[in-house]
Length: 130
Image 1: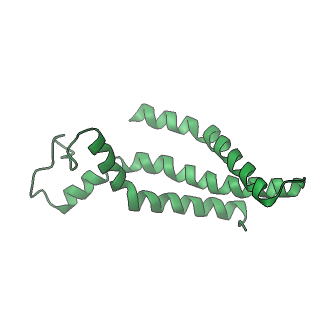
Image 2: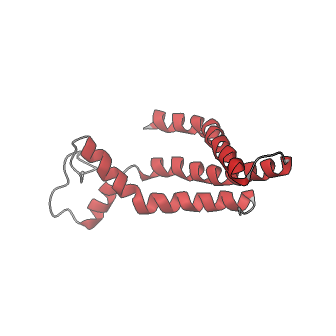
Image 3: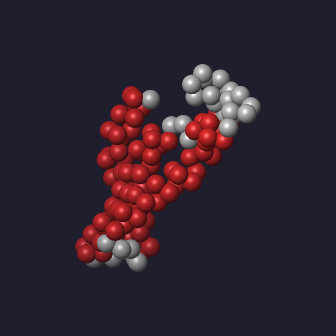
């Protein structure tokens, strides 16, 4: 059973924050590898991070772009969790002949559309800034 929508919204935001903090570096390495860039970049000079630069410089390199990722992931996850709870409640209140599984599927489909509508402008701003 889902919690109330505001609680689910907060849980989604916390999940987005946790995801970004724990896994941003993996995405950074994946993207750099796909683009044939050095895995560790010197953020000031733009080239590969020289050996002996220290663990703090390596950590900064791995978390470059963190704020952009966080500004998209946190609201996405918050809205996804919160809207799923809200959709489920509305669909349950409307009654009808939907089974619980069908109700969850409809709710999930609606979440995809709703989150896209809410967050498309934010994504456009982030793309323009980056």
